[in-house]
Amino acid sequence: MRLLLAALLITFGLSFQASAKDALSLTPQETYDLVQKQGDQVLFVDVRDPVEIMFIGYTDVVDINIPFMLADRSTFLADKGRFAMETNPNFAASVEQALKDKGLGKDALIITMCRSGSSRGKPSADYLLEHGFTNVKYIDHGFQGSGAKEGKKAGMRIVNGWQNEGLPWSMKLNPEKIFQP
Image (tube, rainbow, N blue to C red):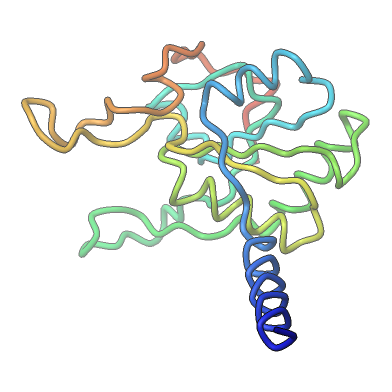
């Protein structure tokens, strides 16, 4: 019996440690509701490159745009049909400054949002957790959502995400919130 109990405790402990390093997701609607109710206690960060935002759309509900990755316009990856992306070396410091500007500490809730949720939303949230921020989540399916699997609009990002849930957004960027190097 003791052996079984010890095995369960070890398993639970290891499982808890592994999940503690990973950021949890929120839906776009959960994020919107949270920001509406507790916006002064939350830092909502759009982590997309500002040029991407310019062509896809933006929500003024975010507090600030701090890119997690920036397009390296000097390096085109022909095999992938896109420019290389490099981690913003000032990302964590910029997030910390945005928290301070809002009167918050590194233990405040930070929510990150990218285009789809998986390529920069979750990685940026995990990155912040690795850099001493303690309460970080990301928006599942991000701003634009996922592509439809079938039908006339297969591949088009019409399934979920901030835009497709009917939350506020526009093509107009707020110069006071958008990243300007």
